[in-house]
Image 1: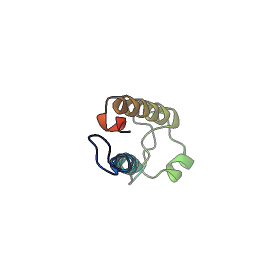
Image 2: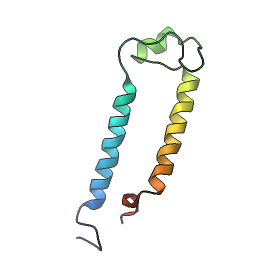
Image 3: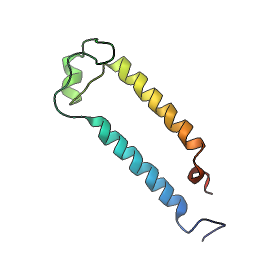
Image 4: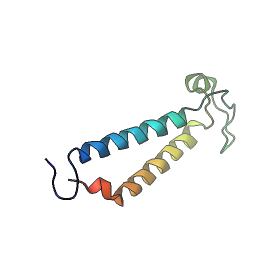
Length: 88
């Protein structure tokens, strides 16, 4: 049932779009190719086990954690101002 200014299924479309964006972002982060032996931010050595587990790895675990947290915070801040996130 449509309500107000939005059409039927608008909420589900927004959810689907959010999931699609997250999948695209995750695929972009997968990388590929040859892994770095040292972190590109702090130059710390990247252990062989991490390089084997994550193809194309470019950051050590602490730097990757910081980058992930900053990205998560940016996504939360972006969602707050998004009119589509206010559909009810």
